[in-house]
Image 1: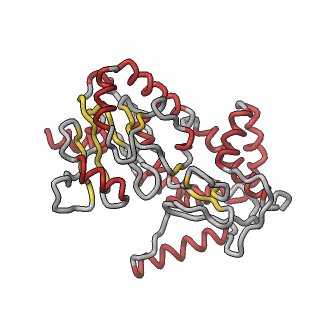
Image 2: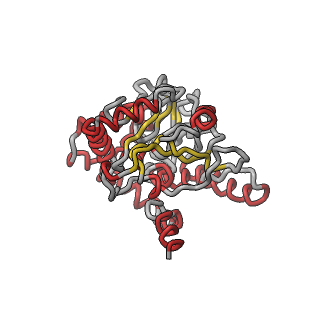
Image 3: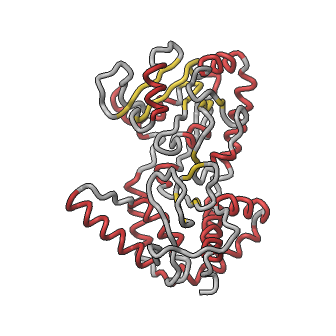
Length: 337
């Protein structure tokens, strides 16, 4: 019985990718012409919303204000599909080619609304540098990022919100973290130097190492039993930040360096999350402070929840995505094609 409950808790707040893949594969069967015929009516839906808010987000994701040309490596919708098929075949042969299937599905779905002769540049995966040519990406550095145009890619993994059933006051007076401890120097330093702090339950989930800070998997449900949850950037952003900020626990982290569709660059320290030094040297002190000032902690949680709420209107998110793409094609001189 206990084992069954543990298994249920592991899946309670997980996105189930099998349903995602099934839905996206079925959407591929819809003729692309139906998408293109629907574009004008989709873009007109801006009239239903706050235009100023919509446009501010479009311009945040796509900061290009000068005309540009796509590169010789840019692709049409058909080219994107052919590339994905080649990647799948190649990955089955040698296993080293990354398929990036979820990235493909998310970009293909939005790209399908535009005429078949339009081209775009894109980079899949964890992008931490600025491309030479304006390109569609999932992630980018927060500063000097004009050539990085954000679209919500791989969202089945990265855009995950929860309904936290536990109140902050009922949670453990501790901070928790689990994750890949080898994909960033910040995470390695954090684990090696702070794993033994009494009010920290932090540990490496993967890869398996013979170190005292290796503690294996901990479900989101179990992590939500703690008042504080560390969100530490890996290769790019901290994936956990979305579900943590939608919970009744406090997000605690250094100032972020990278951002995604979640607009991490707009988060305010000690308004949406607790900011600590890059070396985490003041983390214990900050936690002790908010344990003594729980009214302030609750204000940050409320602000974080409100920040998350703006991403929950799926129809509006779709409109913003299409407008970001539309601006890309317009600024690259493809608006009349």
